[in-house]
Structure formats: structure tokens, C-alpha cells
Amino acid sequence: MRLGRPPIVVCGSDPVAGHVVDGLRADRRRVVRVGREQLATIDLGGVRTLILADPPDPSELVVDILARAKQGRRKGERAGQRLILMHRQDPPPPLPAPDPDGPLRLETFAIQDRAARDLLMRRPLHLGMDPPFRQGPHLLMAGFAEPAQAILVQALRLIHYGNAQPRITVLCDRSREIAGAFLSRHPQATKVADIRFAPLRALRADRGQPADVDTVESASGQVEATLGRDRTKAPATPPAEIRTVAWSRETPVTLVVVCLQDPPGLGLEVARRLARDLAAMQGVSPPILLEIGDRNPDGQVEDWDGQTVPFSYLRDASRAAVLLEGRGDEVARTIHDHYRDSIAAQGRDPDAEPAARPWKRLATSYRQANRHQADHVWAKLAVADCRAVPEEMVESFALTPSEVEQLAVIEHQRWAADRYLDGWSYAAVRDNQRKHHPQLVSYAELSEPMKDLDRFAVRGLPALLARQGLGIVRLLILGIPRPSSDCACGPPLRRLIKQVLDRLRSRYPDRVLILASTLTDRQSRGLVRAAMDQHPGVGLFLLLPQPINKTLTELTDRDARRDFLMLAARAERRISLQGDEELATWFSERARITLILGRSMPARPEIKAVRLDAARERLEWSFEY
Image (tube, rainbow, N blue to C red; front, side, top):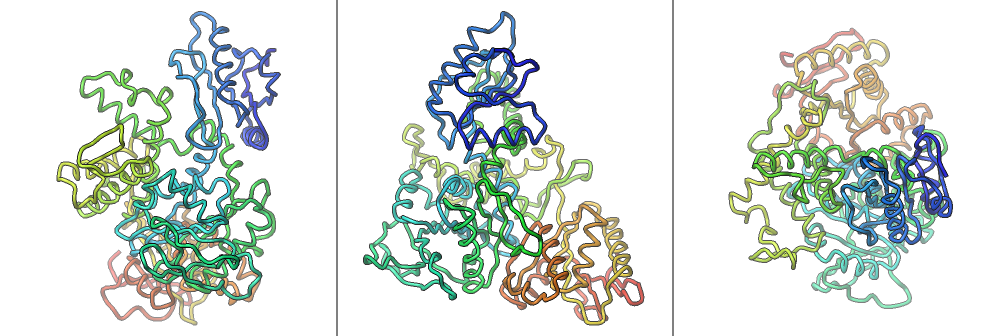
């Protein structure tokens, strides 16, 4: 059976195969779906890419396809066709050792792991926090259906942003059983972050008030709070490694992921209850990422709660950019190319070393190591208040010595987390077979030569991104406090903000301008909207000194609510703050320039400020711009 012009052939089980076909056709790819019987009759020489979408008996099927392809290979024909095996989660099923000179290039694609990487790249752990303001990550996961475990592992790889102890809270049914299974698979995970498990059942009760808080005695003898109680039996003592969940203002939740078996029903209800309970108990409104399965989101902007962001892991993993083009692997490939160049510079042949082979022939384990290092680049940029932009926008960039040292500590934490999750532990003498490593200690305990390895990796970030056509620029945060009552809105204000941004861009050509606002007043919303429309590169930090549901309640006008929600959807960061006092502290510490919408400039001369007088349509600067 011949297929004419080389198509992409998909063979496998639903729902994965159906999502793959839909995702590739949405990208205008020529796709043919076949059953297993049809696949046996296809001339593989006429197939450009063959995708096995979560098929039954994958090992047997791959062996058969590779044998057929080898037998049908024409003399002198070069390898170039792709055979992609999509399986649920790493590690892949047992497969024959790939033949680098074979007609088909065998690739494995772990659906849940790749979806988790893509999700936390588009919605990073720092989406709901501000690391330079001493805020640390606290990820809350509700439910443990697919792909929750993959997201949890990926989060552990990315969760280091500084000295604050990162925390992950998992609320799920059979929490003790799931905790035990997870820790048996990743016994060193508790060295990476403070991981706490607790039952989900408290969120299922139909209550108008936050869930009851009960206490259990942990193995360490400390009494800690946990949501809910199993009324049928007395609480058992958890293993020492499993800590129960404690809700407190000291560790506010910064990001929520909901993965339940019934996404449209229970999942949405749990997301709503978490939004309510976190607002009541912690005064925060973190982004809530909700796995929705096959459902397509509908409704109007006005119906949005301002927090919940839907995603479908199967749909996301089946997009052509992720499945075929390796979206998210760009930096990982650059890291690997740099490693190949270093091997060649030492007079060795990179192609002869398993860890240095070209990316297309590189074993999955080596690809993963490059990916893990690459995925954390964006967290480091967030800590340093930087962003990657097209290289032509940057003249030069270098991290300061203090930044290098700060990021070197984080890089060591990331490296150690990757080793811990792979089962390594500390020992004075390295033993690869037993997975013992002497460098699994704190950064402060490392020797200077070992610290230099981390410093070298950090200093190389600009060169690394430059090889990908990117440059690094620092952020310039423009704070917008609440305006005074005399501040007008409309065309004069829009003209003034354009003048301000034009002048600041001229003064600070090496900076990206970031507006920071609560968006609770019409004047600030109008200014932010005009700025982002006039200058597409301008970013937005949404500041939340109170729960977002309270803000929406106070915006009684339907158009005002819609305006707020549309701008909130464009924010690249959503920063929860504990009331107006912490909001004022944030403006004082983080805003480099304050945009004053009103009558008077601030009394403190050390504050750089610009007053936008819309009534008289003029600007007043407190510094030389």
C-alpha cells in the first residue's frame, strides 16, 4: 500500500491518536491515520514520519517496524525518516538499541512528561510570585490524576529560586498511599523541597466556610494542621518523610494545579473552592491551572474568575510544535551543541562519545539532562530581573559578581535536585553504580573549584542564549500607585504615557519596561492598556494586595470588570501581597520609577517619579531623563 506524497502516518489508541491527528491537521500537516492491520501493509519508504500514539504492545510493534524498514531499504538510501513512539510516562517501554545508520530514526516521546515541561514553560512557577521581593514558591496540587505526577516531578526540578525553602502541598484521595508510592519511586524528593500530602475530601463537603482544621501528630513529634479528617478511623501516624499540610500566612500558595478524574465537574468545583478557601485563609489569589480533559473552554470574559487557567495535557502534547518540532528543546539543543564544541576543542571526536553524539542520534537519557538544565534558565532570569529578547535588541550584557554568586547557588540546587530525583544520594566517594556523589552537599560546603563549575555555567548564560539568537536585558519596573481623585482619563492621558515611554526607552535602551499596577481604578487601567497597545514590548505585573474575588466584587460596573479581566489575562506576573502596607513596601523596593497620576509629586527626593498631569496635558519629572 503506497500513500502518494509522503505524509505523517499515525497509528495508535484513542484518545491519544485522535488528539495527535487533530493537532497536526490544525497545523496544516498532511496526516493519515491507520489501524494496526493497515500499518502492516504500508510501504514504509513512502512515509516521512510514523507516529505510534500510545499503541498496545509497543515493544513488539517497534521491533516489527524496524525490521520491515531495514529489509525494504534501498541501497544507498540515507536515513532520515522518523519513528516516534508516544508512551504515557518515562521510562519508555523496553526497545531495541537504535541503529544510528538504520533507515528509521527511533525517538521516544513521554506524553505526560513533555506536557508537564510545556505547561511549566508557558505558566512558570514564578507566574504567581516575585522572587526578588523575597517570595518563594509554594505549589499546591489538588488531585493526582494524569499528568499530576509528571508535573510534580518537573516542578521539583524547577522549584529553586533562592534561599527560601520551596514547598509543595498535594491534596488527593488516598493521600498516604500516593505519598508512599511517590516517595518509593523518588526517595530523595524530600531533600529537594518541603513536600506535604493531605486528603482532598475536605474540599468536597458543601460548606460555606473554609474547611475544618484538625491536627495529627507527626513522627517527629510536631503537631501540624491538616485539612479534613477521616471520620471513620483515628488518624494514623504518617511516615517521617511525609509531612501533613499546614496552612499559614508565612507560606502563601503561589500556584495551584488541579488534576482530577472528572475535570469538567469535580475539577472545576475544586478549583472554585480552592480559590475561595485560599482567599479566606491566606488572603491570596494564585493562578489556578485546571486540567480540563477533552472539554473546550467557553463563556465570556465577564464570566471568568480571574484565576482559573484551563489546559489539556493531551491536546498540548499533540501540537506539532511540541511533538514534531521539539518546542522547548531549543535551549537544550544549544547546551548540547556547546558541549560538542568543547569536546572537539579538546581534540576528541564528539560523534564517538555517547553523550556527545548529534542531537538526532542522542540517547533519551542525555537529552533529558540537557532539557533539565535548559528548563531552569527562565527561573534564573526571573531571579535576576531579566528577560530574553531577540539578540539585535541587545548591545551587551554581563551579570554582576553578586548576581553570579546568587545564581550559582541556585544552579547547584538545581543540579542537586536533578540528581536526587534520579535516586542519587551523598557519599564521600563517588560510585556511579550505587548512585553516590560527594557533591550532594550545600553550596557553602563545596570546594572553590566545584563552586567555579556553577559560576561558569551561570556566566555562560548570555553566550548560551546568543547561540540561539537571543540576548538578555534587565527589567525596568514602573510602579503605578492609586491615582488621586483629580486625575482625568482619556486621550490626554494616553498621549502622556506615550511620551513617557518614548523618553524612557531612549534613556534606557537596554531595559524592558514593566508596568506594575493593581488595575483597580479606571485611570490606571486606561494608562496600562494604552501603554501595552502602543508599545508591544511593554510587560505587566498585576499586584494583588487583596483576593481577586474581592476586587471583582468591588468593581460593580460590568465594563470595569471586563476591562480588569482582559488586562489581567495579559499580565506576565500576578503578585499576591498582604494588604496595602505590603503593597507600599513593594512599590518602595521594586519600582525603579513611579508614575504619579494626580496633583503632587512624592515628598521623598530619592524616589524617581514622573507626574502625568492629564488636565493640563504636561509631564513633570523628578530626575533628568
